[in-house]
Amino acid sequence: MTNAKYNLEPVEVPPVETKYRVIRTKLPVPESLEIFKTLENSEPRSMMGQPPVVWDRAEGFQVWDRWGNCWIDWSSGVLIANTGHGRPAILQAVREIVDRPLLTSYVFVHEKRAELTESLRKISPDPDHYKVFLLTTGSEAIENSIKLAKTYALEKYGPERCCTVSFQNAFHGRTMGAQLAGGQPEGKRWIVGEGQTFFQVPFPDGFKNEDTSFDLFLSSLKAQGVEPREIAAVISESYQGVGPDFLPYEYAQSLQKFCKKHDIVMIFDEVQAGFGRTGRMFTFEHYDIIPDMIVCGKGISSSLPLSAVIGRADIMNLYPPGSMTSTHSANPLSVAAAIASLKIIQGEKLVERSERMGDILVPGLQRIQQKYPSVLGCVTGKGLVAGIQVVKAGGKTPDAETALRINERCFQKGLLMFAPVGVAGECVKIAPPLSIEEDALREGIAVLEQACEEILE
Ligand SMILES: Cc1ncc(COP(=O)(O)O)c(C=O)c1O
Image (cartoon, rainbow, N blue to C red; front, side, top):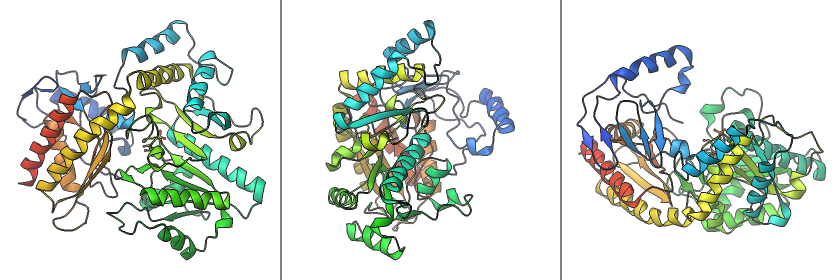
């Protein structure tokens, strides 16, 4: 959870002019303040908290404002634009649907829906036995996966099998079911009196929790009085967004064995981890496991709102015609964007590219971390997602303030990241589009290093 408060007083910053970055005004831009003021008046304050840039245009791995400033984007939105912003093939695909026109069809059939669900089925772990349900947001898809898993358990084993097990520090979205499955207690305080069937266990990240054994999973359930026969589903992000934190290979293997043994539906949340982000099409592939259900969002379209549940056919088919739908499911514009995006990922081999670029990014960050080991607690990453945990000197106590200062200094130098994440806003997180040029990636690493020098020395 972040609570970042960026400075909204314009300050002089050194001008920047490189091949990929331009900063030529005070930041935030004085002329943009009116827009922030309007938003402050019309929106809840929860919508603030990102670096104060007003996006005017985003293309490839760059973001421009209206005043001539240009940033290298290390956010991909928030891990949305995997293929890059505004890719011409995606624009063209959307334009064709606009020009037809076919802006909506509810759940009446349109041809592209068949094309996309077929393509997604084909990249599922077992195309002959998996089905695809298109939705709009990641949270909505998470809700649906939990509903399906609980329905499966109820119908097969009865009401006793009603529990959902997830992980501490998990993030699955902000709707009620998604937050119940989440592992961030502050965020779900509002859900008073619900959730007696949702249980969290420690995530084996190795830094915040050093016990990475699967025994801890078992003992944590026991301590909470949960028996395997009561568990409908186990849900985990394929990597936890607060890190990114990955499951140890052996742990993931044990988790799969446990779920198989007890016929528990294993759900992997790939909303931010999917579509090449970590150098695999899906991040669970790093663990050689096969989830029963895969929840997708964000990078699925690189742009327009779309999400999906890809799951075992016997679970996906539990509801009869007309009883599991959503108004904007398979919206033609989003679907066209997703088809084009997937073709780019496959055609340009962005999954492999992401892995290769990760071999530059992660060691680059580790080198920076090793310069300031007492305050940069650790670096984690795979492919084109990485994070630096900023801590109070010599320990593991999160230091959100310093993380924010590093992030803000990068912003002032033309390197854009979303606000720090993590358990307490201590994680400087990096997620460039998978299409980022190698020299732009290296330039970004150098900017981050400079920012660290200025803030930490
Ligand atoms: C891992 C994960 N799951 C689910 C969600 C929720 O997706 P949405 O914001 O589209 O509802 C997010 C969003 O950040 C996420 O990172």
